[in-house]
Amino acid sequence: MIAIRIINFTYLQILIKTVKTSNMKLFYFLLLFTFSFLLQTQTAKADDLIKVELVGNNNCNGQLEVGIWVRASAFATSDFEIGTSSLFFNFDPAVVTYSSYNEVQFSATATQGTTSNWADQRIDVHPGCGLISLVLQKKEGGSNNYLLSKDEPILVGKIEFDILTANTDPGISLNGGFTSFNSSMSNDGTVSKTLEDYPILTDYACCSNGAVANVGLKAMLGGPYNNSTQLMNDDLRNLKHIPYNDPYVSLGFDYINYNDGSSMINPTTALANKGIHSIVDWVFLKVYNVIDPTMIVTAQPALIKRNGEIVSLDGQTPIRFANFNSCTFSIAIYHRNHLGIQTKANGVSFSQGGSNLLDFTSASVQLEASTQNDINGVYALFPGDANFDASIDAADRSIVWNARNTTGYLSSDVSLDGFCDASDRSFVWNFRNKSGVQLP
Image 1 (cartoon, rainbow, N blue to C red):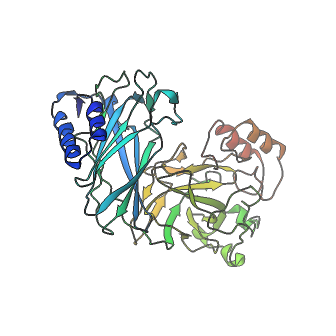
Image 2 (cartoon, one colour):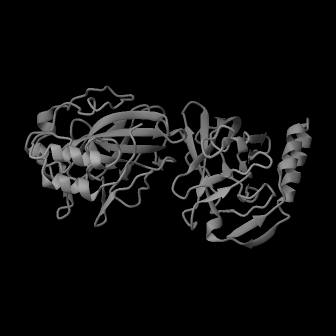
Image 3 (cartoon, rainbow, N blue to C red):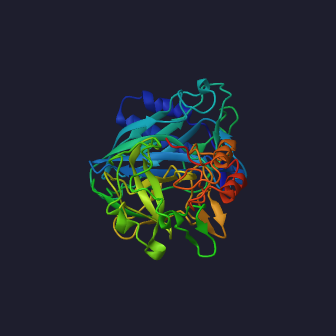
């Protein structure tokens, strides 16, 4: 890996903004690129590495939105700060044309740190050459830097393109040769960080053209999980404690593109003994827009089987998400007394057609601000969140203790065996101070 020491581009970029003719703009762009070849190189340390990710969202209506995410590389030794930096992007002008840009972080209104030290981002576009220059700029003399985390990517902003040729590679990529992340020191033009790799946008196609998408989901609830069988116990079903009606309505869940208060379809069949395919309990799913993680695409209840498969309310049909345009998204799974989990905010990509399985029991699935319990290589949601506040603490211990020796469909029954007893108290104590994904 190479760390680059390079002349600060700020003044040339100001010239590009002020010149009036397209030929002059092109001249200064080329001049700007020429300066990038005046390099002095030195070996980069692991803590110098930056990871940039490009996430596409095709709305199937002639527009492509590209989210720019940045974080400290997983290979970095620790989190670190950056100052004023410049990013360059290429695109194919025969396939897409630039439409607009919305900054999110690294701006005067950024939520991280003291905002007064940062100015609004500046973007320059040369459509004929397929070039975009983006500057993340601190105010002159500003002392506040931006902390990059290894675990939590930061959404820099969103570039919107108009699509000229559908389902064709738009050639959108980060130009690693000219992108420069400055050090956290004052704006002296020193680039002390380098890129882990040079990302290319791959999720540019319209995934389902506004139709529904079939997605296979698998997860394990740690409370009823049986390590010897590698299945969940279905005691609640055997004891006929599982309600026919969706229990998440009473917990205050919001439903998006789905009717709240739903019931099982033919509950006698859904709750019949089907061996490893028998139902264990209800769960709740949310799908998030990968470009704007605060936007919920759909939110709905579902059922989970002993083998971890999550299915629709008939107990067997794969989950179908409505109004689903993008091939890339973020999914969260919630349970009424287990800690919620969510895939990384910058999304999981699925192919169009074929088998789409997201297996939360595997270590390969990266989670957003949450962890699972590793049970001999099988990952399961932590049991013990009896009051469903995304943490296991003294309040949960109190609920479980006060409900001891009771039976039924209970929030205090975190083992899901139909009884609130010593096993539930053990779970809540052993997993104390664990936290999961908050319900938005």
